[in-house]
Length: 273
Image (cartoon, rainbow, N blue to C red; front, side, top):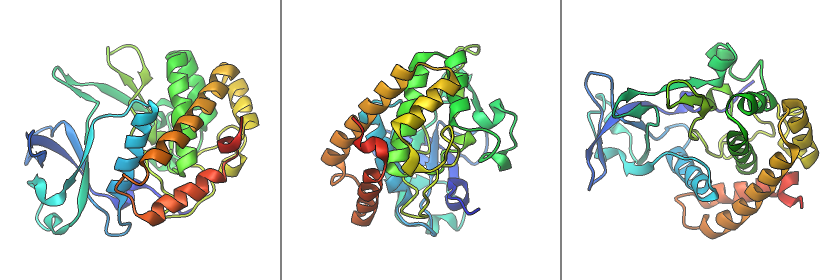
């Protein structure tokens, strides 16, 4: 089945910040790389960096844990391989959360957690089992953050939240916690799809993402139903408010905004009280 995957449409590089005032970045020639990830524009799907920047910005405004990010012109990036410099437009730079002054921080995506090969990142698990692991290993704060991201991804039509787009981070080298968010963008303007990457609990269909589906997810994941429903309700209300205020200020084409507007209206929890 054809699915949208950033890995197939964007070139990514690790980069070093070179000029804090100008926001320039350099791709290292050798070594372990830098503290930023740069995603170049796609020839196949225009506006992907702007889309991800916008959705990550909205997510941060809603209250989700999002790393620092910026849009910059491709011309401001030094050290790109020969030929890559022919790319034009905006690139997205995201500060790496798996780096610290003391060295790398261990990250484990949920394909690794479940022992699933990368090629099977759309298989063998679902969102309720991710929620169950978080409930056991890291507690209610991370469960709530997971529900926020799941609800938000559904409202914007981010159908690519597969196992490798959720990770645990071990900041103290021992205790797992949900990592900051990454790869949050609306995929439906590029490849229309009515299904999420994984099952919520019983279904992948976004039009079936109801409060009852959330109750089922909570029961099967053995996490507090009230926490799940209250977090979902709060996320929807925050999304409505912030999206209405900011959508015209974001670097998005009007067509993309219209598609997200129509899609959000089709999701049952968007209207639930």
